[in-house]
Amino acid sequence: MENGSEKKWNFDGKQKQKGSSVSVRGAYNMLMEKVKNRGDKKPLIRLCRVDPTDNPLYRTSLDASQAVATAVHSYNYNSYSPTVGLPDAKRAIANYLSADLPYQLSPENVFITVGGTQAVDIILPVLARPGANILLPRPGYPQYDSRASCCNLEVRHFDLLPERGWEVDLDSLEAVADHKTVAMVLINPSNPCGNVFTYQHLKRVAEVARKLGIFVVSDEVYAHITYGSNPFVPMGVFSSIVPVITIGSLSKRWLVPGWRIGWIATCDPHGIFHKTGLVKNMIDNLEISTDLPTILQAAIPDIIGKTKDDFFVKNLSILRETANKFYDLCKEIPCLTCPNKPEGAMSVLVKINFSQIKDIIDDMDFCAKLAEEESVILLPGVMVGLKNWVRISFAVDPSDIVDGFSRIKAFCLRYAKMS
Ligand SMILES: *Cc1c(COP(=O)(O)O)cnc(C)c1O
Image (cartoon, rainbow, N blue to C red):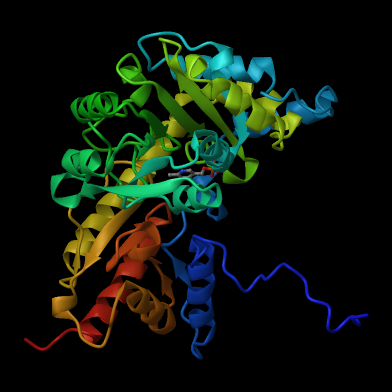
């Protein structure tokens, strides 16, 4: 008989799971360790996360908070929720989305999820089939890559073009697709790029997707967070060309990422999702997943219905101000290039010009040294698929942009090559 110490177990956690290389949180923790190493403490400036809620500037509306309090105090929502969500909440979301569509969504088109994150977690396994692949944007949002590799859905990337305002490179999209491609993902307004796709461009994407025979997953968690010249156009507008799975969330627009309220909406006037079995697969998947707390579902109609416009107007004007400030200050730093002024969402990508700096090997090294020397945290571009760029989140206090960029400027001057 073997004794306890000799017994062999089949699990080996040192064999890394496929696709689970460095996560965004892992990179963040590594950079925070660098900050801790400093002796003299400069106040920390985090331009790396899209969660501005620790700053009172970015506080949700009183109406939204009251909606949750009312749901709690009613004692009517202490039960489990129906699998696909409370009917009133689904109706409220369907009406909210339909205001921007040429047709009316019904509550049956809406599936409530635990944030946009769970919407991604639900959708990708539904699309996964042996040998199937999905097309993801590069740069993109790493949750899609991680989730796809967990469910053995092969990932292929198409490019977004910085020199064309981060539009989809339609040639590269067609080039990577084949008959095993089931869907493509587009994020609009874009995290990490900060652009907002035009009506015309979205229409062309829809036409190419139709030609390829693939569905479009449109991540619109930043819907309506636009403050430049392009208005927000939901992909669902083109769902008579191609069936669209819309992912949404209250996290960003209502400034409540901790409430975890999100959804999947099927925009599909021709009923293709039913015909292909996608809806049934999705419901099966939702049945074995956890639900959004009933209390929060119950609050959705009032959160959406009662929040007044001035709340959104105020938030957009703060974001516009920080985006402008960021763009002006970034232009003063020769080793950084921002190809486009951000017009939507809460982050932007900036290119590091390595021809102008010395003693820094790549974006990870840039962010590590910046954290260690200046206590400024940026996200290395490699985390969103673009090596030697950095992602900057500007949903912060405008003064943090000013202080942060004066430190980044000092840092870049220290590492500048002598000309
Ligand atoms: C924040 C974010 C999500 C996740 O949304 P949550 O509601 O916070 O779970 C999904 N996609 C993108 C592009 C995001 O930025």
